Image 1 (cartoon, rainbow, N blue to C red):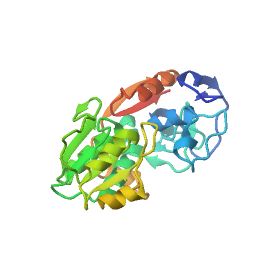
Image 2 (image 1 turned 90 degrees about the vertical axis):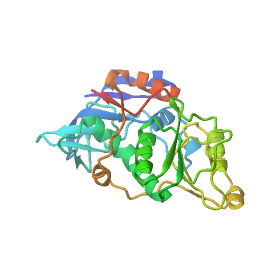
Image 3 (image 1 turned 90 degrees about the horizontal axis):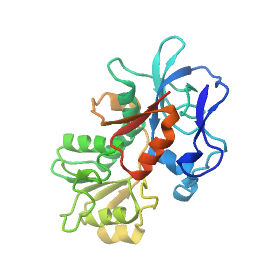
Image 4 (image 1 turned 30 degrees about the horizontal axis):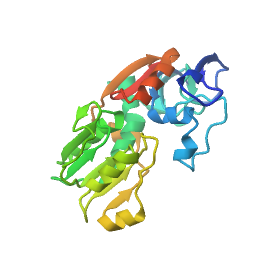
Length: 277
């Protein structure tokens, strides 16, 4: 089979298409779509341990990717986390989930990891009608779903994106009740200071800037707010039942995944990116 691997850490150019043996396992699928995520560019650069000390890091060479849709030998269309990486034409999914009829491959992948992240994040924030909710990276896969979930909960949504919305120049912005924080660095710090004293809630689920959120326990104490990480337990089936409408981004070929990584790092993408073998 074909797989995209890298043998050393570095820029997108280290990703190469190679012929490798087919994986062996109970649920072997012919891959029809591969989910692409910004976090994979961090791993490729060898920066995973810097941002997430608990992350063990991959053993090289490695095939990246954590979500695929594929077809089994019996004709089932399933999605799930591949055992040996997703950037390939075949994969073994150890806990496959059937993709419902009427849900495209692209939609399924947009609702799998990003969908479970968005729903878990929204539940943790306990959004109330009338809340002012700041969504960072609102044009991305997770952010666009968080906008929908906050609107459904009756909140006033402030969508921050380099592609539109309120942008990231927040001087003079009124306090907010909830921040969905995925950027870190200076932007994350500005978002924290926007939280309403004594009542604000921030849910942290990423560091897209490459720098963790710079907030101390003393800062939290000073403002009287809650800062929490991403809770676990939300299932893809729960997300599918909500009938969310994901934003579908560009589609790449397996051979062009390096180009997709360049776009992800440039922050020029919108919605969920996928690749097809």
